[in-house]
Image (cartoon, rainbow, N blue to C red):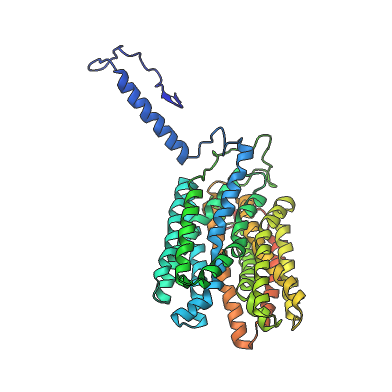
Length: 467
């Protein structure tokens, strides 16, 4: 029997009593003490690695202390979401390296794509080893990538340090807060994941002013700003990651009973079986459509304000900060909606907003500042919304076992959305000389997404072969 503080082997004989075998020997008390110490240390290490639930969580009962993991996830994601502040670095980098606007966009686009792929690969390790070691490794890469960017000598080294190293780090860490929220809050997964990820959405509101201050400060400049922010991210993320723990498998809050799945038993599909369901592919397409619209809006918010609405640059920049608040708020809001009204209805609402906002922007012109602000608040709100709807749907449709791995597969749609969003806006601008043309295909995406969600975004009742 293994206990805190001492080890008692079953059927153990008292010290001094000989046993059968080749030769009976007395067991010295110090030997027993040594093995008791080893067993205790091993037990506690196993408890940390396999997430044995302590009696208290952050000094409170598990039902109360678990909210600390949402704060942990929110603050961590504020650091990770600094990618949304890249527009602050873009023009200074273009001037510093003498590169074109297209080249200056590459680090952002590649960061998002690499981030999505890294999230997919890290999911299985989070499930196997727990969030703490995986998040610690990712935190080192995040901080190191940002700090090494200080020594960039051109676009190639910038992509290597910022897009590749930091992007991989963000992808590794990102799945940790998502999985923590879903496991500690089985009764309200959507809301919990939305709160934890809200930090990613509002990050630009926090980190963009800091980046702008550092870039403009004499003696620092754009490259040193990367170094200073990277050092801060390293310290913060390492400290928070060291606290990450899963509850034990099957843990539920006191008094809560897991609901029964609509088709009888709670869903629990392996990743291999998940990808054979129609629900997985419908979710992936809907996720791609929703994030394409949102990520396109993030990339063109300020240029659309200046070129179509004729806002002055200061006002356009101010509105982007307001939009970031809607991006962050969309995560807990749509997470709650997914919990309360089902993921299908939350998805239908998001596509209705995207469609309405796109149609509004097709008729927007100079002096339509309020229409522009309203429509782009909708785009940013729905981007944040899909980053809560998708993880909540993954848990609800396919079950919690191997959750991080399963959501990593679903999250690949986010990376595809980042590429499509940049392509749609860029091609529209190049072909028609205005960003207005980009909102026609986005309106079509909203309509198609609404139909897909209404018709097929439902829990799987049987496994379908994709062959």
